[in-house]
Length: 552
Image (tube, rainbow, N blue to C red; front, side):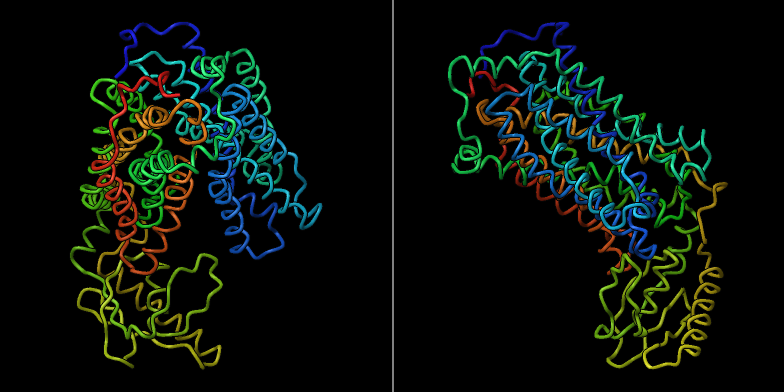
Protein backbone atom coordinates (compact mmCIF):
# COMPACT_ATOMS: atom_id res chain seq x y z
CA UNK A 1 0.00 0.00 0.00
CA UNK A 2 1.14 3.53 -0.68
CA UNK A 3 2.11 6.09 1.92
CA UNK A 4 1.70 8.92 -0.58
CA UNK A 5 -0.29 11.99 0.53
CA UNK A 6 -3.99 12.30 -0.10
CA UNK A 7 -5.17 13.53 -3.52
CA UNK A 8 -4.48 17.23 -4.16
CA UNK A 9 -5.53 19.70 -6.88
CA UNK A 10 -3.87 19.43 -10.30
CA UNK A 11 -0.81 21.67 -10.72
CA UNK A 12 -0.23 23.80 -13.85
CA UNK A 13 2.63 21.48 -14.85
CA UNK A 14 0.38 18.41 -14.57
CA UNK A 15 -2.30 20.11 -16.66
CA UNK A 16 0.35 20.85 -19.28
CA UNK A 17 1.54 17.23 -19.24
CA UNK A 18 -1.99 15.89 -19.78
CA UNK A 19 -2.75 18.46 -22.49
CA UNK A 20 0.50 17.88 -24.36
CA UNK A 21 0.34 14.10 -24.13
CA UNK A 22 -3.32 13.99 -25.15
CA UNK A 23 -2.87 16.53 -27.96
CA UNK A 24 0.07 14.64 -29.41
CA UNK A 25 -1.82 11.35 -29.24
CA UNK A 26 -4.87 12.94 -30.91
CA UNK A 27 -2.60 14.03 -33.76
CA UNK A 28 -1.11 10.54 -34.04
CA UNK A 29 -4.56 8.95 -34.25
CA UNK A 30 -5.57 11.63 -36.77
CA UNK A 31 -2.65 10.59 -38.96
CA UNK A 32 -3.47 6.92 -38.53
CA UNK A 33 -7.18 7.24 -39.36
CA UNK A 34 -6.66 9.42 -42.43
CA UNK A 35 -5.42 6.42 -44.33
CA UNK A 36 -8.37 4.22 -43.32
CA UNK A 37 -10.92 6.92 -44.16
CA UNK A 38 -9.40 7.50 -47.61
CA UNK A 39 -8.66 3.83 -48.44
CA UNK A 40 -10.90 3.81 -51.55
CA UNK A 41 -9.16 6.86 -53.08
CA UNK A 42 -5.71 5.58 -52.08
CA UNK A 43 -6.52 2.28 -53.82
CA UNK A 44 -7.09 4.13 -57.10
CA UNK A 45 -4.01 6.33 -56.73
CA UNK A 46 -1.43 3.77 -55.62
CA UNK A 47 -2.75 0.34 -56.65
CA UNK A 48 -4.17 1.24 -60.06
CA UNK A 49 -2.11 -1.51 -61.71
CA UNK A 50 -4.61 -4.00 -60.24
CA UNK A 51 -8.32 -4.52 -60.89
CA UNK A 52 -10.63 -2.40 -58.72
CA UNK A 53 -11.52 -5.18 -56.24
CA UNK A 54 -7.94 -6.29 -55.68
CA UNK A 55 -6.73 -2.68 -55.44
CA UNK A 56 -9.15 -1.95 -52.59
CA UNK A 57 -8.17 -5.15 -50.76
CA UNK A 58 -4.47 -4.31 -51.08
CA UNK A 59 -5.20 -0.80 -49.77
CA UNK A 60 -6.99 -2.34 -46.76
CA UNK A 61 -4.13 -4.81 -46.24
CA UNK A 62 -1.70 -1.88 -46.20
CA UNK A 63 -3.95 -0.29 -43.54
CA UNK A 64 -3.94 -3.57 -41.57
CA UNK A 65 -0.14 -3.68 -41.77
CA UNK A 66 -0.10 -0.64 -39.50
CA UNK A 67 -1.94 -2.67 -36.84
CA UNK A 68 0.17 -5.78 -37.26
CA UNK A 69 3.52 -4.03 -36.65
CA UNK A 70 2.32 -2.10 -33.59
CA UNK A 71 3.66 -4.68 -31.07
CA UNK A 72 7.10 -4.44 -32.70
CA UNK A 73 6.99 -0.66 -32.25
CA UNK A 74 6.01 -1.26 -28.63
CA UNK A 75 9.08 -3.45 -28.10
CA UNK A 76 11.52 -1.13 -29.88
CA UNK A 77 10.34 2.19 -28.45
CA UNK A 78 9.45 0.69 -25.09
CA UNK A 79 13.08 -0.41 -24.72
CA UNK A 80 14.29 3.10 -25.62
CA UNK A 81 11.83 4.67 -23.20
CA UNK A 82 13.07 2.54 -20.32
CA UNK A 83 16.73 3.19 -21.17
CA UNK A 84 16.95 6.86 -22.21
CA UNK A 85 13.70 8.29 -20.82
CA UNK A 86 10.03 8.87 -21.59
CA UNK A 87 10.32 12.43 -22.96
CA UNK A 88 12.73 11.89 -25.86
CA UNK A 89 11.30 8.54 -26.94
CA UNK A 90 7.89 10.15 -26.87
CA UNK A 91 9.28 12.90 -29.15
CA UNK A 92 10.78 10.44 -31.66
CA UNK A 93 7.50 8.53 -32.09
CA UNK A 94 5.50 11.61 -33.03
CA UNK A 95 8.22 12.79 -35.45
CA UNK A 96 8.15 9.45 -37.29
CA UNK A 97 4.35 9.37 -37.35
CA UNK A 98 3.95 12.96 -38.52
CA UNK A 99 6.66 12.87 -41.20
CA UNK A 100 5.38 9.55 -42.58
CA UNK A 101 1.90 11.04 -42.91
CA UNK A 102 3.19 14.22 -44.56
CA UNK A 103 5.19 12.17 -47.10
CA UNK A 104 2.03 10.24 -48.08
CA UNK A 105 0.54 13.63 -48.98
CA UNK A 106 3.36 14.40 -51.45
CA UNK A 107 4.08 10.84 -52.64
CA UNK A 108 3.88 10.38 -56.46
CA UNK A 109 1.16 7.95 -57.58
CA UNK A 110 1.37 4.66 -59.47
CA UNK A 111 0.76 6.55 -62.71
CA UNK A 112 3.90 8.64 -62.07
CA UNK A 113 6.48 6.20 -60.69
CA UNK A 114 4.91 2.78 -61.16
CA UNK A 115 5.34 -0.03 -58.63
CA UNK A 116 7.63 2.10 -56.43
CA UNK A 117 4.56 4.10 -55.32
CA UNK A 118 2.71 1.28 -53.49
CA UNK A 119 6.00 -0.07 -52.08
CA UNK A 120 6.88 3.33 -50.55
CA UNK A 121 3.29 3.72 -49.32
CA UNK A 122 3.40 0.39 -47.47
CA UNK A 123 6.78 1.28 -45.93
CA UNK A 124 5.28 4.56 -44.68
CA UNK A 125 2.30 2.65 -43.23
CA UNK A 126 4.67 0.30 -41.42
CA UNK A 127 6.54 3.28 -39.98
CA UNK A 128 3.23 4.78 -38.81
CA UNK A 129 2.31 1.52 -37.08
CA UNK A 130 5.72 1.26 -35.42
CA UNK A 131 5.48 4.85 -34.18
CA UNK A 132 1.96 4.34 -32.81
CA UNK A 133 3.24 1.21 -31.05
CA UNK A 134 5.65 3.42 -29.11
CA UNK A 135 3.36 6.41 -28.69
CA UNK A 136 0.57 5.04 -26.52
CA UNK A 137 2.82 3.41 -23.93
CA UNK A 138 4.85 6.61 -23.74
CA UNK A 139 1.79 8.81 -23.30
CA UNK A 140 0.18 6.58 -20.67
CA UNK A 141 3.43 6.08 -18.73
CA UNK A 142 4.35 9.77 -18.90
CA UNK A 143 0.98 10.99 -17.64
CA UNK A 144 0.67 8.30 -14.94
CA UNK A 145 4.14 9.04 -13.61
CA UNK A 146 3.24 12.73 -13.30
CA UNK A 147 -0.13 12.06 -11.65
CA UNK A 148 -0.56 12.32 -7.88
CA UNK A 149 -1.57 9.20 -6.00
CA UNK A 150 -5.33 8.73 -6.05
CA UNK A 151 -5.72 10.56 -9.39
CA UNK A 152 -3.93 8.29 -11.89
CA UNK A 153 -7.18 6.89 -13.29
CA UNK A 154 -8.64 10.36 -13.83
CA UNK A 155 -5.43 11.75 -15.36
CA UNK A 156 -4.72 8.86 -17.75
CA UNK A 157 -8.38 8.72 -18.83
CA UNK A 158 -7.73 11.85 -20.90
CA UNK A 159 -5.30 9.79 -23.01
CA UNK A 160 -8.11 7.26 -23.54
CA UNK A 161 -10.30 9.87 -25.27
CA UNK A 162 -7.68 10.58 -27.93
CA UNK A 163 -8.46 7.77 -30.38
CA UNK A 164 -12.07 8.94 -30.64
CA UNK A 165 -11.06 12.61 -30.90
CA UNK A 166 -8.42 11.77 -33.54
CA UNK A 167 -11.05 9.98 -35.61
CA UNK A 168 -13.33 13.02 -35.33
CA UNK A 169 -10.56 15.39 -36.36
CA UNK A 170 -9.64 13.31 -39.43
CA UNK A 171 -13.28 13.07 -40.56
CA UNK A 172 -13.76 16.82 -39.99
CA UNK A 173 -10.73 17.78 -42.11
CA UNK A 174 -11.70 15.31 -44.86
CA UNK A 175 -15.31 16.55 -44.91
CA UNK A 176 -14.25 20.20 -44.97
CA UNK A 177 -11.75 19.65 -47.80
CA UNK A 178 -14.21 17.55 -49.78
CA UNK A 179 -16.95 20.16 -49.44
CA UNK A 180 -14.66 23.06 -50.38
CA UNK A 181 -13.11 21.42 -53.45
CA UNK A 182 -15.90 19.21 -54.76
CA UNK A 183 -15.75 15.44 -55.25
CA UNK A 184 -13.90 15.45 -58.58
CA UNK A 185 -11.03 17.69 -57.42
CA UNK A 186 -10.84 15.93 -54.07
CA UNK A 187 -10.51 12.49 -55.68
CA UNK A 188 -7.92 13.81 -58.14
CA UNK A 189 -5.57 15.78 -55.85
CA UNK A 190 -7.50 17.25 -52.91
CA UNK A 191 -7.18 14.03 -50.87
CA UNK A 192 -3.53 15.04 -50.30
CA UNK A 193 -4.47 18.14 -48.28
CA UNK A 194 -5.48 16.33 -45.01
CA UNK A 195 -2.13 14.50 -45.11
CA UNK A 196 -0.12 17.65 -45.86
CA UNK A 197 -1.77 19.83 -43.17
CA UNK A 198 -0.70 17.25 -40.57
CA UNK A 199 2.76 18.89 -40.69
CA UNK A 200 1.25 21.86 -38.86
CA UNK A 201 -0.21 19.56 -36.20
CA UNK A 202 3.20 17.89 -35.92
CA UNK A 203 4.98 21.22 -35.43
CA UNK A 204 2.61 22.24 -32.61
CA UNK A 205 2.96 18.89 -30.87
CA UNK A 206 6.77 18.80 -31.10
CA UNK A 207 7.01 22.38 -29.81
CA UNK A 208 4.88 21.51 -26.78
CA UNK A 209 6.73 18.25 -26.08
CA UNK A 210 10.15 19.91 -26.24
CA UNK A 211 9.12 22.23 -23.40
CA UNK A 212 8.07 19.36 -21.12
CA UNK A 213 10.15 17.79 -18.35
CA UNK A 214 11.08 14.14 -17.92
CA UNK A 215 8.68 12.15 -15.70
CA UNK A 216 9.42 12.35 -11.94
CA UNK A 217 9.46 8.55 -11.54
CA UNK A 218 12.07 8.14 -14.28
CA UNK A 219 14.16 11.07 -12.94
CA UNK A 220 14.14 9.51 -9.46
CA UNK A 221 15.11 6.10 -10.82
CA UNK A 222 17.88 7.59 -12.98
CA UNK A 223 19.28 9.61 -10.08
CA UNK A 224 19.45 6.40 -8.03
CA UNK A 225 21.21 4.58 -10.87
CA UNK A 226 18.43 2.02 -11.20
CA UNK A 227 17.59 2.35 -14.93
CA UNK A 228 17.42 -0.95 -16.79
CA UNK A 229 20.34 -1.88 -19.03
CA UNK A 230 18.33 -4.64 -20.74
CA UNK A 231 14.59 -3.89 -20.47
CA UNK A 232 13.62 -6.55 -23.04
CA UNK A 233 15.42 -9.28 -21.09
CA UNK A 234 13.93 -8.09 -17.80
CA UNK A 235 10.44 -7.74 -19.28
CA UNK A 236 10.19 -10.96 -21.24
CA UNK A 237 13.17 -13.09 -20.20
CA UNK A 238 12.23 -13.38 -16.53
CA UNK A 239 9.15 -15.45 -15.72
CA UNK A 240 8.03 -13.24 -12.80
CA UNK A 241 7.50 -10.32 -15.22
CA UNK A 242 6.62 -12.30 -18.36
CA UNK A 243 3.77 -13.91 -16.39
CA UNK A 244 2.33 -10.44 -15.68
CA UNK A 245 2.73 -9.46 -19.37
CA UNK A 246 0.78 -12.56 -20.46
CA UNK A 247 -1.91 -11.97 -17.83
CA UNK A 248 -2.18 -8.32 -18.90
CA UNK A 249 -2.80 -9.50 -22.47
CA UNK A 250 -5.37 -12.27 -21.94
CA UNK A 251 -6.86 -10.94 -18.70
CA UNK A 252 -7.15 -7.26 -19.68
CA UNK A 253 -6.24 -5.91 -23.12
CA UNK A 254 -7.63 -8.66 -25.42
CA UNK A 255 -11.15 -8.25 -24.01
CA UNK A 256 -10.81 -4.46 -23.82
CA UNK A 257 -9.76 -4.38 -27.48
CA UNK A 258 -12.67 -6.41 -28.88
CA UNK A 259 -15.20 -4.39 -26.88
CA UNK A 260 -13.55 -1.17 -28.13
CA UNK A 261 -13.59 -2.21 -31.80
CA UNK A 262 -17.12 -3.65 -31.55
CA UNK A 263 -18.51 -0.41 -30.13
CA UNK A 264 -16.68 2.04 -32.40
CA UNK A 265 -16.15 0.14 -35.67
CA UNK A 266 -18.12 -3.09 -35.95
CA UNK A 267 -21.39 -1.38 -35.03
CA UNK A 268 -20.93 0.97 -38.00
CA UNK A 269 -19.99 -1.91 -40.30
CA UNK A 270 -23.04 -3.90 -39.11
CA UNK A 271 -25.42 -1.03 -39.82
CA UNK A 272 -24.15 -0.33 -43.34
CA UNK A 273 -23.54 -3.93 -44.46
CA UNK A 274 -26.13 -6.07 -42.67
CA UNK A 275 -28.88 -3.53 -41.99
CA UNK A 276 -28.42 -1.59 -45.25
CA UNK A 277 -28.46 1.84 -43.62
CA UNK A 278 -26.96 4.44 -45.97
CA UNK A 279 -23.40 5.50 -45.14
CA UNK A 280 -24.12 9.14 -44.37
CA UNK A 281 -26.94 8.35 -41.90
CA UNK A 282 -24.96 5.57 -40.21
CA UNK A 283 -21.89 7.78 -39.80
CA UNK A 284 -23.92 10.64 -38.34
CA UNK A 285 -25.62 8.36 -35.78
CA UNK A 286 -22.29 6.78 -34.77
CA UNK A 287 -20.77 10.28 -34.48
CA UNK A 288 -23.68 11.37 -32.24
CA UNK A 289 -23.15 8.35 -29.98
CA UNK A 290 -19.43 9.06 -29.75
CA UNK A 291 -20.08 12.67 -28.76
CA UNK A 292 -22.46 11.55 -26.00
CA UNK A 293 -20.30 8.65 -24.85
CA UNK A 294 -16.77 10.11 -24.91
CA UNK A 295 -17.02 11.98 -21.54
CA UNK A 296 -17.56 8.60 -19.87
CA UNK A 297 -13.87 7.80 -20.45
CA UNK A 298 -13.15 10.45 -17.82
CA UNK A 299 -16.05 9.33 -15.61
CA UNK A 300 -14.88 5.71 -15.42
CA UNK A 301 -11.22 6.70 -15.17
CA UNK A 302 -11.99 8.86 -12.13
CA UNK A 303 -14.34 6.22 -10.68
CA UNK A 304 -11.54 3.65 -10.91
CA UNK A 305 -9.51 5.80 -8.48
CA UNK A 306 -12.27 5.24 -5.93
CA UNK A 307 -13.55 1.67 -6.44
CA UNK A 308 -10.68 0.12 -8.41
CA UNK A 309 -9.77 -0.45 -12.06
CA UNK A 310 -10.52 -4.16 -12.19
CA UNK A 311 -14.26 -4.18 -11.31
CA UNK A 312 -15.05 -1.55 -13.97
CA UNK A 313 -13.09 -3.28 -16.75
CA UNK A 314 -14.47 -6.72 -15.85
CA UNK A 315 -18.03 -5.34 -15.68
CA UNK A 316 -17.63 -3.90 -19.18
CA UNK A 317 -16.44 -7.24 -20.55
CA UNK A 318 -19.24 -9.15 -18.80
CA UNK A 319 -21.94 -6.76 -20.05
CA UNK A 320 -20.60 -7.19 -23.60
CA UNK A 321 -20.81 -10.98 -23.29
CA UNK A 322 -24.34 -10.90 -21.87
CA UNK A 323 -25.89 -8.17 -24.02
CA UNK A 324 -24.28 -8.13 -27.48
CA UNK A 325 -26.79 -10.51 -29.08
CA UNK A 326 -29.95 -8.82 -27.71
CA UNK A 327 -28.50 -5.32 -28.28
CA UNK A 328 -27.60 -5.97 -31.92
CA UNK A 329 -31.04 -7.59 -32.36
CA UNK A 330 -32.62 -4.42 -30.99
CA UNK A 331 -30.41 -2.38 -33.33
CA UNK A 332 -31.86 -4.32 -36.28
CA UNK A 333 -35.43 -3.56 -35.18
CA UNK A 334 -34.67 0.13 -34.67
CA UNK A 335 -32.59 0.75 -37.82
CA UNK A 336 -34.41 -1.51 -40.28
CA UNK A 337 -37.76 -2.67 -38.82
CA UNK A 338 -38.87 -4.11 -42.18
CA UNK A 339 -35.86 -6.43 -42.20
CA UNK A 340 -36.47 -7.50 -38.59
CA UNK A 341 -40.13 -8.22 -39.37
CA UNK A 342 -39.26 -10.18 -42.51
CA UNK A 343 -36.67 -12.27 -40.65
CA UNK A 344 -39.19 -13.08 -37.93
CA UNK A 345 -41.99 -13.94 -40.35
CA UNK A 346 -40.14 -15.57 -43.24
CA UNK A 347 -36.88 -17.20 -42.25
CA UNK A 348 -34.38 -17.94 -45.02
CA UNK A 349 -32.82 -21.42 -45.07
CA UNK A 350 -30.29 -22.94 -47.47
CA UNK A 351 -30.62 -26.72 -47.69
CA UNK A 352 -27.52 -28.23 -49.29
CA UNK A 353 -25.15 -31.18 -49.34
CA UNK A 354 -22.34 -29.98 -46.98
CA UNK A 355 -19.76 -31.65 -49.23
CA UNK A 356 -20.40 -29.15 -52.03
CA UNK A 357 -20.25 -26.01 -49.87
CA UNK A 358 -16.96 -24.05 -49.97
CA UNK A 359 -15.55 -21.47 -47.57
CA UNK A 360 -17.43 -18.31 -48.51
CA UNK A 361 -14.92 -15.61 -47.56
CA UNK A 362 -14.06 -13.97 -50.89
CA UNK A 363 -12.95 -10.36 -50.24
CA UNK A 364 -11.52 -9.72 -53.71
CA UNK A 365 -14.48 -11.19 -55.60
CA UNK A 366 -12.12 -13.22 -57.77
CA UNK A 367 -13.25 -16.71 -56.76
CA UNK A 368 -15.81 -18.19 -59.15
CA UNK A 369 -18.27 -20.39 -57.28
CA UNK A 370 -19.79 -23.17 -59.39
CA UNK A 371 -21.63 -25.57 -57.03
CA UNK A 372 -25.34 -25.13 -56.33
CA UNK A 373 -24.61 -24.54 -52.63
CA UNK A 374 -21.97 -21.87 -53.25
CA UNK A 375 -24.08 -20.09 -55.86
CA UNK A 376 -27.08 -19.99 -53.49
CA UNK A 377 -24.95 -18.61 -50.64
CA UNK A 378 -23.29 -16.06 -52.91
CA UNK A 379 -26.64 -14.73 -54.13
CA UNK A 380 -27.94 -14.30 -50.57
CA UNK A 381 -24.68 -12.76 -49.39
CA UNK A 382 -24.81 -10.33 -52.33
CA UNK A 383 -28.28 -9.28 -51.18
CA UNK A 384 -27.08 -9.02 -47.53
CA UNK A 385 -29.65 -11.59 -46.45
CA UNK A 386 -29.05 -13.51 -43.23
CA UNK A 387 -29.79 -17.23 -43.51
CA UNK A 388 -29.54 -20.54 -41.69
CA UNK A 389 -27.91 -23.70 -43.05
CA UNK A 390 -29.58 -27.12 -43.24
CA UNK A 391 -27.96 -30.35 -44.40
CA UNK A 392 -29.50 -32.07 -47.43
CA UNK A 393 -28.89 -35.67 -48.58
CA UNK A 394 -25.64 -36.27 -50.49
CA UNK A 395 -25.90 -35.40 -54.17
CA UNK A 396 -29.00 -33.24 -53.70
CA UNK A 397 -28.89 -29.82 -55.44
CA UNK A 398 -29.08 -26.90 -53.00
CA UNK A 399 -32.25 -24.90 -52.54
CA UNK A 400 -33.23 -21.64 -50.87
CA UNK A 401 -36.36 -21.63 -48.71
CA UNK A 402 -37.84 -18.17 -48.06
CA UNK A 403 -40.85 -18.56 -45.78
CA UNK A 404 -42.78 -21.35 -47.47
CA UNK A 405 -41.35 -20.80 -50.97
CA UNK A 406 -38.54 -23.11 -52.12
CA UNK A 407 -36.26 -21.99 -54.97
CA UNK A 408 -33.93 -24.68 -56.39
CA UNK A 409 -30.34 -23.57 -57.07
CA UNK A 410 -28.19 -24.77 -59.97
CA UNK A 411 -24.58 -25.81 -60.63
CA UNK A 412 -22.76 -23.81 -63.30
CA UNK A 413 -19.81 -26.17 -63.73
CA UNK A 414 -19.59 -27.44 -67.29
CA UNK A 415 -22.37 -25.18 -68.59
CA UNK A 416 -21.76 -23.05 -71.71
CA UNK A 417 -21.18 -19.38 -70.83
CA UNK A 418 -24.48 -18.20 -72.35
CA UNK A 419 -26.54 -20.82 -70.54
CA UNK A 420 -24.76 -20.17 -67.23
CA UNK A 421 -25.43 -16.45 -67.61
CA UNK A 422 -29.11 -17.09 -68.35
CA UNK A 423 -29.54 -19.44 -65.37
CA UNK A 424 -27.76 -16.93 -63.12
CA UNK A 425 -30.13 -14.13 -64.15
CA UNK A 426 -33.22 -16.33 -63.70
CA UNK A 427 -32.09 -17.57 -60.29
CA UNK A 428 -31.23 -14.10 -58.99
CA UNK A 429 -34.56 -12.72 -60.21
CA UNK A 430 -36.50 -15.55 -58.56
CA UNK A 431 -34.69 -15.00 -55.26
CA UNK A 432 -35.08 -11.19 -55.44
CA UNK A 433 -38.80 -11.40 -56.28
CA UNK A 434 -39.45 -13.91 -53.48
CA UNK A 435 -37.49 -11.84 -50.94
CA UNK A 436 -39.45 -8.74 -51.94
CA UNK A 437 -42.75 -10.60 -51.62
CA UNK A 438 -41.66 -11.88 -48.19
CA UNK A 439 -41.05 -8.30 -47.04
CA UNK A 440 -37.23 -8.20 -47.22
CA UNK A 441 -36.22 -4.58 -47.99
CA UNK A 442 -33.46 -3.67 -50.46
CA UNK A 443 -32.34 -0.93 -48.04
CA UNK A 444 -33.34 0.59 -44.72
CA UNK A 445 -36.27 3.01 -44.98
CA UNK A 446 -35.25 6.34 -43.33
CA UNK A 447 -38.91 7.15 -42.64
CA UNK A 448 -39.36 3.98 -40.55
CA UNK A 449 -36.01 4.20 -38.78
CA UNK A 450 -36.15 5.00 -35.05
CA UNK A 451 -33.04 7.21 -35.12
CA UNK A 452 -33.28 8.21 -31.46
CA UNK A 453 -33.37 4.58 -30.36
CA UNK A 454 -30.48 3.72 -32.70
CA UNK A 455 -28.38 6.50 -31.11
CA UNK A 456 -29.34 5.25 -27.61
CA UNK A 457 -28.23 1.70 -28.52
CA UNK A 458 -24.99 2.92 -30.10
CA UNK A 459 -24.32 5.11 -27.05
CA UNK A 460 -24.72 2.05 -24.80
CA UNK A 461 -22.09 0.25 -26.91
CA UNK A 462 -19.78 3.27 -26.59
CA UNK A 463 -20.30 3.36 -22.80
CA UNK A 464 -19.13 -0.27 -22.66
CA UNK A 465 -16.04 0.94 -24.57
CA UNK A 466 -15.43 3.65 -21.97
CA UNK A 467 -15.79 1.13 -19.12
CA UNK A 468 -13.08 -1.18 -20.44
CA UNK A 469 -10.83 1.52 -21.92
CA UNK A 470 -11.08 4.44 -19.47
CA UNK A 471 -9.23 2.80 -16.53
CA UNK A 472 -6.87 0.50 -18.46
CA UNK A 473 -3.92 2.88 -18.98
CA UNK A 474 -3.58 3.48 -15.24
CA UNK A 475 -3.90 -0.24 -14.52
CA UNK A 476 -1.23 -1.27 -17.03
CA UNK A 477 1.19 1.37 -15.69
CA UNK A 478 0.60 0.17 -12.14
CA UNK A 479 1.20 -3.50 -12.98
CA UNK A 480 4.89 -3.05 -13.85
CA UNK A 481 8.03 -1.65 -12.13
CA UNK A 482 9.32 1.76 -13.26
CA UNK A 483 12.58 0.41 -14.73
CA UNK A 484 10.76 -1.70 -17.37
CA UNK A 485 7.29 -0.10 -17.33
CA UNK A 486 7.31 1.43 -20.85
CA UNK A 487 8.42 -1.86 -22.45
CA UNK A 488 6.28 -4.20 -20.36
CA UNK A 489 2.95 -2.36 -20.64
CA UNK A 490 3.28 -1.46 -24.33
CA UNK A 491 3.53 -5.02 -25.67
CA UNK A 492 0.31 -6.52 -24.19
CA UNK A 493 -1.56 -3.32 -25.03
CA UNK A 494 -0.57 -3.39 -28.70
CA UNK A 495 -0.95 -7.14 -29.20
CA UNK A 496 -4.40 -6.83 -27.66
CA UNK A 497 -5.45 -3.77 -29.62
CA UNK A 498 -3.41 -4.27 -32.79
CA UNK A 499 -4.11 -7.97 -33.29
CA UNK A 500 -7.16 -9.05 -31.27
CA UNK A 501 -8.93 -5.73 -31.85
CA UNK A 502 -7.57 -4.58 -35.22
CA UNK A 503 -8.41 -7.89 -36.89
CA UNK A 504 -11.95 -8.01 -35.44
CA UNK A 505 -13.80 -6.62 -38.51
CA UNK A 506 -12.04 -9.07 -40.86
CA UNK A 507 -12.55 -12.05 -38.55
CA UNK A 508 -16.19 -11.24 -37.82
CA UNK A 509 -16.89 -10.74 -41.53
CA UNK A 510 -15.32 -14.14 -42.29
CA UNK A 511 -17.57 -15.82 -39.69
CA UNK A 512 -20.69 -14.15 -41.12
CA UNK A 513 -19.69 -15.04 -44.68
CA UNK A 514 -19.19 -18.69 -43.73
CA UNK A 515 -22.24 -19.22 -41.53
CA UNK A 516 -24.69 -16.90 -43.28
CA UNK A 517 -26.08 -15.53 -40.02
CA UNK A 518 -25.41 -11.79 -39.69
CA UNK A 519 -25.23 -12.03 -35.88
CA UNK A 520 -22.64 -14.81 -35.76
CA UNK A 521 -19.75 -12.38 -36.20
CA UNK A 522 -20.49 -11.31 -32.61
CA UNK A 523 -19.18 -14.65 -31.34
CA UNK A 524 -15.62 -13.41 -31.85
CA UNK A 525 -15.80 -10.43 -29.42
CA UNK A 526 -18.06 -12.39 -27.04
CA UNK A 527 -15.61 -15.31 -26.74
CA UNK A 528 -12.56 -13.04 -26.33
CA UNK A 529 -14.32 -10.74 -23.82
CA UNK A 530 -15.55 -13.83 -21.94
CA UNK A 531 -11.99 -15.19 -21.78
CA UNK A 532 -10.73 -11.87 -20.41
CA UNK A 533 -13.53 -11.71 -17.83
CA UNK A 534 -12.75 -15.19 -16.47
CA UNK A 535 -8.94 -14.85 -16.48
CA UNK A 536 -8.99 -11.25 -15.29
CA UNK A 537 -11.40 -11.99 -12.45
CA UNK A 538 -9.41 -14.99 -11.23
CA UNK A 539 -5.81 -13.90 -11.73
CA UNK A 540 -5.46 -10.10 -12.12
CA UNK A 541 -4.83 -8.16 -8.90
CA UNK A 542 -6.30 -4.72 -8.22
CA UNK A 543 -3.66 -1.99 -8.66
CA UNK A 544 -5.24 1.36 -7.72
CA UNK A 545 -3.35 1.63 -4.38
CA UNK A 546 0.05 0.65 -5.77
CA UNK A 547 2.85 3.16 -5.12
CA UNK A 548 4.48 3.37 -8.56
CA UNK A 549 7.50 5.18 -7.11
CA UNK A 550 8.22 2.17 -4.92
CA UNK A 551 8.10 -0.25 -7.89
CA UNK A 552 11.63 0.11 -9.21
